[in-house]
Image (cartoon, rainbow, N blue to C red):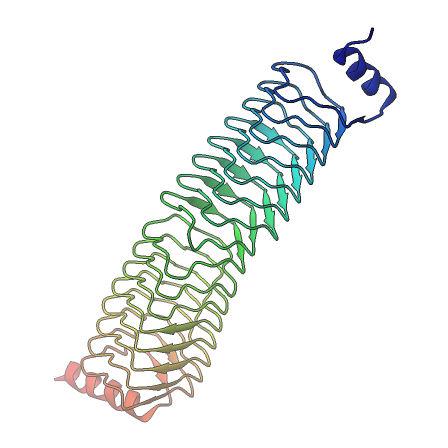
Amino acid sequence: MSTLWDDIARARRLCRPLQHLHLQGWQARGRKLADLALQKCDCADADLREADLASSQWIECDLRGADLRGARLKATHFVRCRLEGARFDGIVSDHAGWIDCDLADSSWQAVELSQASWMQCRLHGADFSRSQLTRCAFAASEAPALDLSHARLRQSALNGLDLSAARLQGLAADTVLFMACILRDRDLAGLQLPRCNFDGVDFGAANLRGAELSSANLHASRFDGACLEQLNAPNALFLEADLRACNLTGARLDGALFVRARLSDCDFHGASMCQSVWDHGRLSRLDWREVLFDHARFDHVRAIGVDARGARFDHASLHDAQFDDSDFTGARLRHARSTDRDLLAAQQTLLSLEST
């Protein structure tokens, strides 16, 4: 009489899937199951710790509560599987994939995965804390209450995730795409997010105090009521972004691009914005007191109600810029190039004071 392991060996040899097997509580710890295909098998509460599952295929299987800690998942794929409460902690693998799987309350603590993907999965309450994900992708998945605390993401993509209830404390992401993710009203203070792509993301009422966003892409993002105090975002792209009632005091935005951006009622007091570019921007009621704008460019800007007292515009370009009802008292405009009458008057006043 053949045993289960004989059937598995035969299936692997003949490249045939195992189907409709009842394997609840299956004890397969450390077993070699590479290249195996299973379809519609009941493997609930299976012990697959440290098993070799490389290049295996799991199709419409029940793996609820399964323990896969330390398993080898290189090029392993799970399709339409039930994996609620499954444990993947500590896995080190690459090219694994989960498609249309239910992964609610699954645990991925301290995993190290590269080029893995989760497509159309349900990740309610999944725990990725302290994980390291490189070149990974989450797409069209549901992920409320996702735990990414102290996770490290590199060159990865999070597409359309609702992160409004996610745990993000200590998250570090470098060159990560947050396409259409929901980050409104989130506490992102101090997070390290350099070179990330937040194209079109809504940061309304979010707290980004002291966050690291150097060279980030914030094209068409919205920041109404956001706290950006002490933000470090040199060379960030704010192209066509919308900032309203934001606090940017003390922010470091040297080299940032605000081309065609719309800003109103924002406080930049004491910020550093040297070599920033504001061409064709629409600005109203901004506090630019004591801001550094050396070598910045404001060509074709239209502004009203800007308070630039004590700001520094040395070598700045303000070609065809208009600043209506604005105050440049005490501003420094050495070698600045401007066609605005008020700016020219302020520049002339400064030159007169320096010559006396």
